[in-house]
Length: 212
Image (cartoon, rainbow, N blue to C red; front, side, top):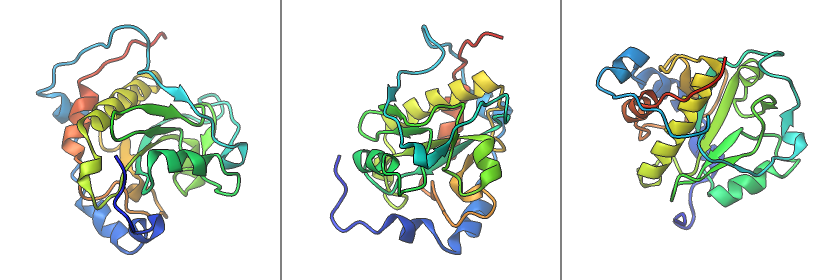
């Protein structure tokens, strides 16, 4: 899928005073509520969905030893405002000074891992949140819900469920948040068209097997 020509710039759509209004409009959904009608399933084999290692430049994250050095307590949902390919190029540019741990492609839900989970990705615009979170970028634009495809939701939910199971993070809206909800941010993603109720239900349908 290719974006329409002359798309608004990433920063133009993701910044501004609308951030506070968007955060206030988000409807909380606890893991109990999300899982009330969901039938839990355990994916066959492995502890994570398939991912492709496409490393970000070392200038866009901090080497660390998580969760020993910092606890991992939150998953932050982002929207790229770029194509999948262009997002990966930005993460490989040392001048970009930002990267997320994962990027999910719209067309088929393919997942790229760009920063290892033990390292601190510069994705949230808040150092404290960076140290304690995993960032997942989703290909698309916040004003165009056609980018939020079934495969994107499904594969991202598998990934988020695996992260939550690995670090024992509750699968609820207090711990799975949008970039807009990070204190001090000027971004509004994932935006009003992101289906939080659907996403949390998908996350709560899955239970990955992790040792320990």
